Image (cartoon, rainbow, N blue to C red; front, top):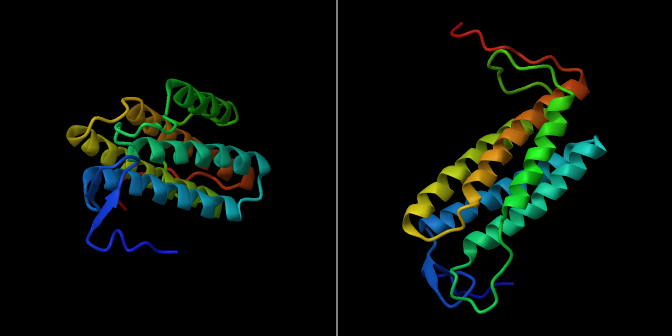
Length: 179
């Protein structure tokens, strides 16, 4: 399927407004889409049903976040929005992950198992999405809950990567400064 409507470098938001494809808003929801796609890669290689199940919940929330960012507020049918409940859900998921982990006393290097490494990459992409959302918020009126949501999501992904390494029997590599 193709429409040719974006051939001049513009795209539609939910509603009548069109914006440049390199606008801060499109950059923000593009980074969210990239993160969601990366979580699909993580899920495809993950053999732990709890981790996969939780990541599917996150993917659904990311679709809401993308919809939230793509809404210009002028559409008569407003799409779903990220709420404080979504952020609280991430906090509860992070708390469950932390229950099984030893306290972190040092910086650790990304790595270990394949799933843990991919989750660390997802955390970095999440941080980029968060930065893009902050940039978009300076130019557009966006949902104020999006920044806290993505801040919590990056913490969750970090801790979930640690859980994945623990379950895989991979030891965390402590960063010891320069070689």
